Length: 292
Image (tube, rainbow, N blue to C red; front, side, top):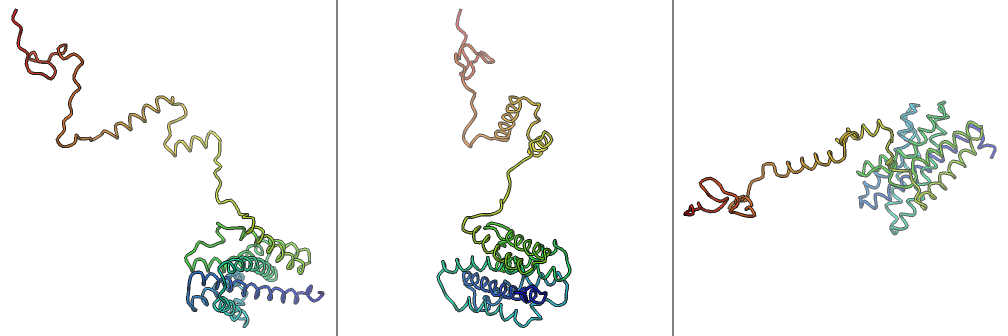
């Protein structure tokens, strides 16, 4: 236990967590490749991208030499092993779903802690450690989903995902600043696993969009102007009258009678009470004068 408290021991633990995340993410990518009915090359491609994508993004942003996935001889074989295991083993869809959830929780915990530890080891502060820990955890999955033309899971629509990575990275950073890096590793991974699995079972998630609107007078005036509504000073009756008249004009403007029909004026109630020119009624023939 004392050896884990040394910088070399923390580096070894970080490397082990990174490789565990690569294997879990490659298995996860293989599970998705199976649901998409891809061939062997598809399994390998999706598994490698899912397993190594987050670490490649992290190491590229850190700019501390070549990414470790290209220099360490264990990273690429580990990703290939995970993809091939998913290709060979055929289990039921329900079992894959349960395995997918467990692997997802494991990947978030392993990589969030590993990313935060590597960022702190590179001499950066706590905020870059939070950022790169989160990117390490969700970067590979986002690349995998975009590769398969799916909405990345990190953008929402599911249980807590990136939020769990932020919490795990924050725990690691706090414990590192308290000079307890080993406790941060263990606690970060454990909290990520428990929080992710609990959020999945209970359906916890972040709000997708708020319907709140400001209630001030200025905000109301801007909304009415944007929607084309009448000012607040107009009477409701006048506004309704104008809108109804405009609707009638739009409805009857340019209207024409149907072929073979004519518009006829309605006949008066008493035809003999209304006379036209030349002694005619409104609709009838000319009337003969009555002899006196």
